[in-house]
Image 1 (spheres, one colour):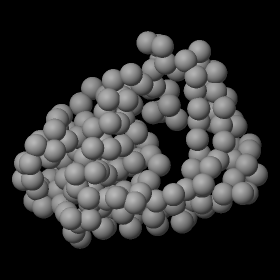
Image 2 (cartoon, rainbow, N blue to C red; image 1 turned 180 degrees about the horizontal axis):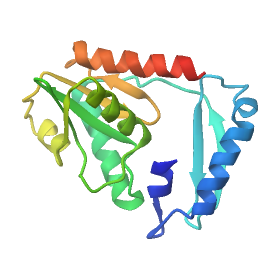
Image 3 (cartoon, one colour; image 1 turned 90 degrees about the vertical axis):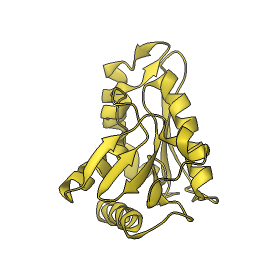
Image 4 (cartoon, rainbow, N blue to C red; image 1 turned 45 degrees about the vertical axis):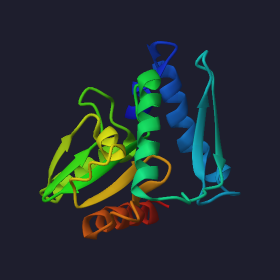
Length: 182
């Protein structure tokens, strides 16, 4: 809800009444609305006038999870954030005992990114943001041990060619959290 409240439509932050409507709609109708897709994706569609609709659709896992494809997705999400104020997907890398994510320190943190950041700090890891991390990755700079995408839709997605114990730990933790909530 914090990330929704931080989104921008037509140059203005989302109206607080829309955030309240979304919260109430989720609390009152999500379970009945998700009967057809119990493992589905909650979709909130907001038009340029700030009008919204909410629905649940089928979940389809990412087909391509290479480092470069995940970095491209994160880069596209950052372009979206230039308009909306929130990047729904961010690239994360492990450098020793430091977790680094591709995000501007001034942007509103997405729900999933906030969760992973909190979990990392709980584990005693140093966490920092690094603008243009995806540009470096796509430019061939791979000065890290592991990489994964954090997505509001897909959760934690380890890069198949840069996966490791830490990426798998975050992916597993995210899945455990979902299994407890559902």
